[in-house]
Image (cartoon, rainbow, N blue to C red):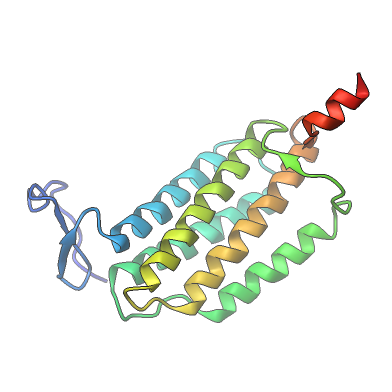
Length: 187
């Protein structure tokens, strides 16, 4: 394991740069740091979700995902390293299939909402999509692993399905979108 922080502030970032795990210093607004920030924000948001009343099956799943996201952040902090494994993508797909088969098929678009936990899950999904977009942007200039892109893509799908479950089980039910034309036709 790397060095443990004994002092939180170092002042080394006062010039607008930050250090990667490799020792390389990069601008704090670089594409790599942007993705790292998105992954950190997503992980923090999952922590907020875990403070909500969430079914045990989903809270255990979210905790596993938090560990994966920490690995992904580590991979991003060490350009050229590969910490994410394809088995984790397969694991996400299995969980996604298991959860999705308990839900009725979608016939309408769903709006974020349906209770606090479901809304937070939808917010996490949106942050995950942003992280994925920024990771794709980073991949244009620097190598990133295919597994990390796949993981974020599957995770956003999983978070969508989890939001549906949370809206139904501990929330107020799913909120279905109605177009203005449909609303006007009902009047």
